[in-house]
Amino acid sequence: MKKLFPLFSVLALGCSSGDDANEQFVEAPIATYTLDLDFSNEFQIGQNIGLNYFNDITVGVIDYSTNNIRLLTASGNSSYVLEGPGLNNITNATRVAAPTLNTFYPNYVGLGQLIKDKQGVIYSAFHAEEHDGTILPGGIPGFYASIGLGISNDNGQSFSLLDEPLVDNIYDITYDNGYGDGGLGEPSITFSKDSTEIFLYYVDHNRSGRGVNISMSKFNVNSNGTPDFDNCYYLGDDNSFTSTIIRSKEVVKGTGQSDAIFPQVTYNKLTDTYLMVYSENNWGEFVNGSTNPSSSGIYYRQSEDGINWTSPAVQLIQGWSIPYSYDEHSFMWHPNLIYTNDSQSEGYLVYSKANTLSEGHKMWAIKFNLTQN
Image 1 (spheres, helix red, strand yellow):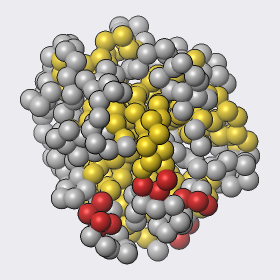
Image 2 (spheres, one colour):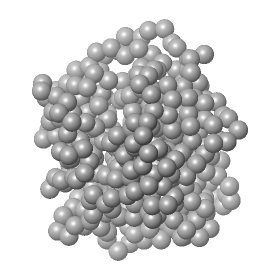
Image 3 (spheres, one colour):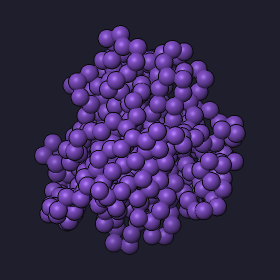
Image 4 (cartoon, rainbow, N blue to C red):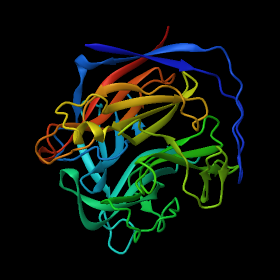
């Protein structure tokens, strides 16, 4: 069974950086593409490596060749490198990061999507949690989330974690927003098209006048190709970036009684656009008594500049986006696009799903192709 989804591409030119920067773009003729998902060939990843509750965050690709694949993601409350000769034959898992007392990640550390600089150093933004004793739907511990940075100088064999969060939050852990979740989390990190900047997307759990939706910040890249993670720039409502610590603008929001969560963003060379896959959590469907989700599921959007995500949201897979209860609801979440060729015209949509939370969610993949109409 195959399902087709349209894509549209516009050529993007020009990129500026600094304390306050606006992106400038020149439109070119629109090229139409189709995203082809082959649902007849869905398969489970790493079913024999002894892990459960994974992928529990984005997925980072350390190596991807014809005979060796190494992926970075979270399982349970820790981070692991998964390895094997093929995506459908992952044979080993090695823990590379774990929660640590007296840090901002005492209860959860989830490394995932990553970038590599010109010297081969790996940087992975990670989801960190401090638990406060509250309980979220599905029996999940309540948390205050922060975004950290893990660095590997040995191609993912080990990671050192920075002592302070990567992004400053105007609300600290003592702020009571009336819910069991708070802070900033579930990050996605990627280079800009010309590799002069690093875009960081994440979920704002602070609430307080907002839903739980996707925001972004950015960092500059030094002239020698190394990231400048010492200076974070926050996206304002006027689409300019500032070094002043603010609550960054929501770049993708759920519609109606819905939240946009769990982003993964990549720049796609074939379409010359940024592609985001994410989960739409239509909590209104659940609270209004629906037994089967309609609007909830895995979605994608496109952006010419990585900042303005004005293209229509397209539902790729229908399903609950979070576990509303421990034993009664199936769900799927944390989608990723992994490219498998140089032109980035094909690859896998990778995500996690389960029939119930109690059985533990597992990683799955579906082949995709991008073709020009």
